[in-house]
Length: 458
Image (cartoon, rainbow, N blue to C red; front, side):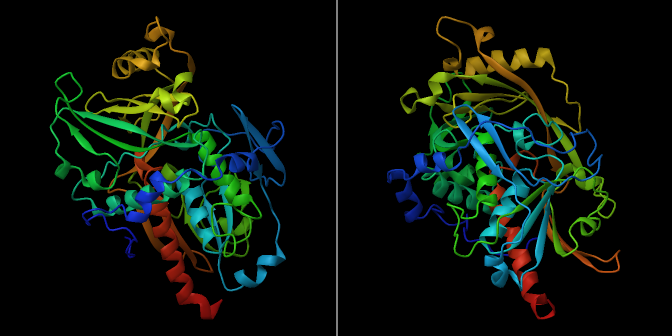
């Protein structure tokens, strides 16, 4: 499916290079400046059609306004643009106009990588990052950390995860701790694991096998890794995509600001041309929606229902208080995932294959809170019980999975008078964030190779 060789080879004894390790010890730079950059005035509502529960149920409405949205002490600005900038015209004259269909974490990260390589990008999506209560796509609901699921034999997903880890090392030095933080991770499992059994044992800092497990007779490993605040992280991605001068990508070679449109009706990939006449290439990042598109009809996609509880733990904001991520594998699985150092924590969860109900189960929610309080007692207010944990929301999201794994490949659709080149980017299941930059690199490499082949004809 994927014909490029990634920069990072997980088979090396230590894939985390010296430069990356030095980043961990270097003082952070510019997080306050970056927070100021993405702050703005008070919230205004988005215009355009409301969400429905089908893939694209109502006509497309283009957003051509400045939109802001608030989160805690940060008010993040979306500059959603629909304009042609002459400054970029020369650089883009021999590049295809790429339309990314979908604005989940894969769609946004694909667009980030492509803009950084100089492409002109338009994003069309039913659900946008600010739709924090959209249950029909998974990105807003994720705990979102880096904890690779790849097995020792799964080299493709090892590469994707390793590339993302390296990129997050860079971003970690720049983003505020409320957006991204490196914390202690503990993975508890019913079976014993040694370092040789965990492919990323030489990638992450401070990896160790706990000799006495977690103290309950189970087996555990410990290491440092990343956790992010999903609302702030996706809004940061949007700010980089839409800024005239992005701060954390190479602005000198970046393409023009990305045009983001809410599009509620899309029957096929070929229909993109009716909205974007000069579109020459589509990135299909529609998740489970790939099963409904007339010219895709991928019967291998399916949802994995996940239920979580978002709670408030103010003490996790301070580095000295030891915010930590704990995951207990098995059936059922439970996990405590801080949203960076925002003071919000995701408690989970469920992994309901091929279930699509978006109604929270009250009994399951209580079980999640009770079991997570056992894993990490610090989430319980002093002198209280698990029932007193401040709940922000009960959440259900649908993870976009696929039989056979994620689909990343180039395809030429010839069911139109003019063939349409498509790069598919969907079906990663629960690993969207931790594999995002690795998948985006594959997508961009495929598009680069295609652009080289067709350049004489453009």
